[in-house]
Image (cartoon, rainbow, N blue to C red; front, side, top):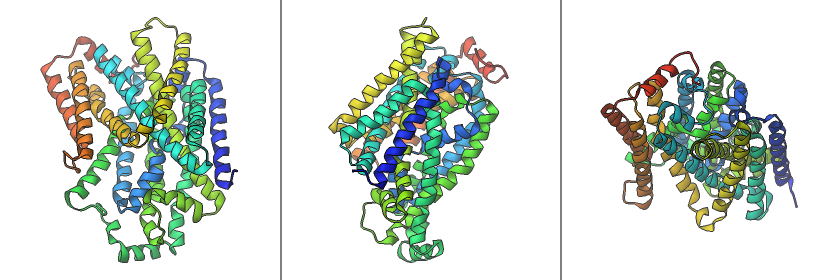
Length: 488
């Protein structure tokens, strides 16, 4: 039996699927499917970037961390996100845009003429995006079960089936259109649900006075964590946010959908202004949640406020925002994994002479293949408890592993294909070892795996590049990137 919460959530879910299918009616070519024929305006780019960056983790895990006394660490990391977005949009994006990329591994193919480098980049995207998507889908299913009251298998099939359907039909265009709609939904949720805590405490001034007397640690940067652990928590979260913005395939791929370089730069400015309001309104408010005296787990704080402290319709929209955020991230990961499988692996290694019409068909078939892999992964009971942690660690490791090859390839003429290959090959397992070592206890818990990984990958990239000589083709590509011409 549907109540107001589940009824509105079902209506929103159906609306997303219908809009995704409607947007897909304009998808007829490979360029449509991968980069919506480079036609996106600034507002839609902003919407899809924020929607893809903020998943259900933001609404549950990050608000939960704020409840546990780490509000400033959580909020401040999005300052790094906004800063990274401005760096990307106002400086770096123009170079990527000029290369007319269909996928991010396409950059490695053009900049470093080496099958090894291109294959390594493709595998990083394919495996990390698929694993990350399994984690997001598991989280979405957990929230969906709470809202809808459906079984796990029914929720999984419904959510994954809808995502697969409109990604199959519309590709990037469907993803971007639905992302923008979802962004508006959870922007409303963030600006209403969080402030409801202050309202129920008698206002912001009263809440601050109570907090100063009962839990002053929420006003410190390190929160409840002390010493080295507290400092490194802040550092790690900021570096992580910076890396995700600058190196996550599903985010930097949005450069290639823009109408122009100027349009993408405008989108980054919009994002830099919008993101702080959204995050502060949502996450910082939840650091005051303990003052309500409610006995719920931190991760359940957001659902509690949505169900009990605001009018039911507003609360239902707020809970729909969690589903929206999760689905928007999943669709972006989905599209990147399928595009890489079809364009960077199937085409490059098995069907080099394939026509655009056949590649479009292969791309759509790749969506189904990725969907099946995600379904199998999300259905395995053994993965359910650990997938979120390990998939996120792997995805973050991948971003740190290829970041130097990506950006030094643009900024440094001496960057070579050997440097790119070895930096990715060595840094990726190193980051995973550090991340697992912290979890298993044989490395310090405060050791930031992302900083270790970026340090290793950057060092290897620079050292190996200095020991080798770039080919004439590599030099030509670098010079062309920095000219006003487009690469063909």
